Length: 50
Image: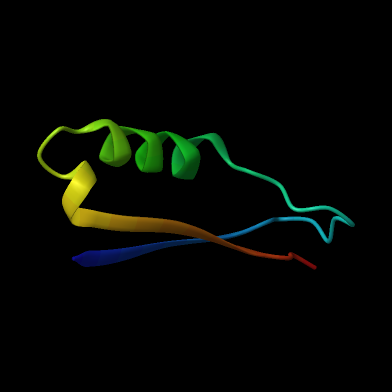
């Protein structure tokens, strides 16, 4: 299984995690792909800004 880590950092120091549209969209596309979806483990890692 291929493991993919999408890393994003917020521009601001927010008290809650934000979910940028690009990272969420990329994960959704990979998960929905009939060939790649079952073969990949995609995770989004959020880093606080500041």
